Image 1 (spheres, one colour):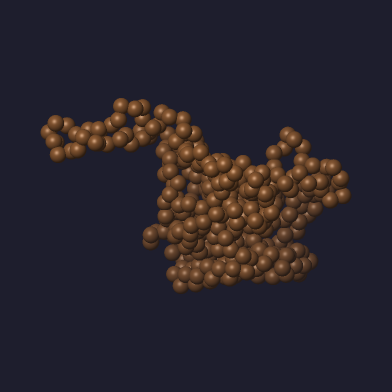
Image 2 (cartoon, rainbow, N blue to C red; image 1 turned 90 degrees about the horizontal axis):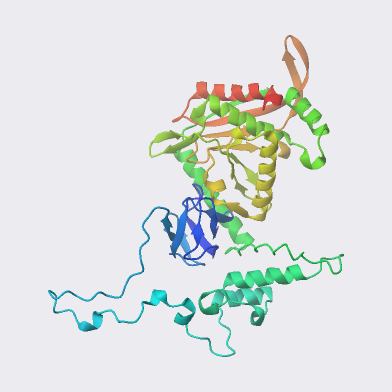
Length: 418
């Protein structure tokens, strides 16, 4: 069970998307886990063969619990355990019954021959699948089981339910169904908690993580005001050339400026683990996203420094949609190397954040406000934004933190280069 953030202690397997014997590769989503914050799609980091599932669906286990065994590439495949070998003459005490029978080994027989036939007229279905079928109003008599011996599983029921929905005409479009060439999408796995239970659990784990951060992390705070006139003027001009769906939000410039600043002050990017700072070469920016029912989650956009503004915009839009739907990938939850929170749209002018352990820095951006501003001896009105840094004093200090904020401001003065 992956540790999907400092505020996670347990996870519940709600669906396996692979079965023993399946070939898997790095990056594949192999399971769905329910946590206090969201339903997480668990990615695999090895390529090989799924040998055995250790934790069944529906079971809640602590982080670090082995979920499955994977036979990696290059590893010798273990043959099936043979029947107990006959003892050598030097061990006369072994009973003769342990000698292997002359018949062919079981592994050479077709799998279908090893499973007893079903009783006529009886539907083989797991208890969980039967309960879900009742909830989704699925007739089990018309569901084909894919489990051992044709047993109907939870995924079989959900696929049948999805097929029923796809077969129905959409409102206002009589006769319109799903084209034959487009298979029905895999239905989302059913979470194990109600929205009210998840909200209560989320507040509990957020409180635990933030209390730990304030207790163990020696925070220091810095703030700066950034003239956003050049950045906003460039953004307006750039968006005039685009369709509505292709337009950029100013937050993508902030994310890219943070990634550029990290290159100059790498002490802000990484983790405090086992009493030492471990710098991260990759720049995965966690983006704090509020949930509709309350609560907060900060999944990562990977390799922000290598992405264009358009790519960051697409990644951010996709991330927000999936956060609000409650489905994220494990790497998005666990990989953030620095976090950004932007509360400007909520009218907040200045944000002083709490570092999300084991990260060592959090950047906060506030509302862009028209303020008097002096530049080159001239006083005028400019759109000004407050930028703050919460830094871990074990990994950096105020001098380096000041250089970091200055780098963000400098990059925002040249938006065309982001």
